[in-house]
Figure 1: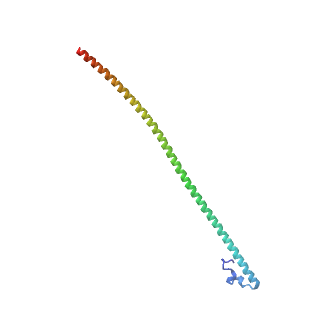
Figure 2: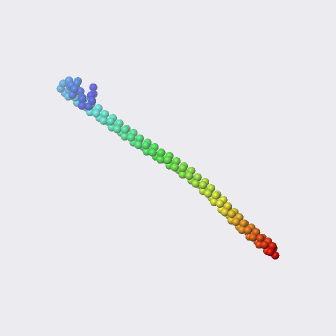
Figure 3: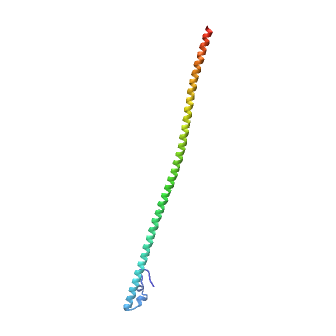
Length: 138
């Protein structure tokens, strides 16, 4: 029966310790060899578990980085959509401003035309009054 490290059979007075002469020494040596082998197996398993643990940590970190990158990409896409929407609204507003400026220019031109017509009518009316005043005096 194998015992935990440091507690082999010959140390406990078990079957290997009860054997006599070289057979007892051989039994103790076999127990120590078995103990050493078991210790190596346990160490190898511990090392393997540590490697797996480190691999899992690395994988978790990679997933975290990918998640962060994905979040950044989503934020970038949302921002791009917002910019695109703002650009479309800006283009629509710019077109509307151009329409309003054209309408304003037309209205100003019409007012100038109206003012010119008013001055022409005023001049004609003034001329008529002047003519009528001359006729009345004559």
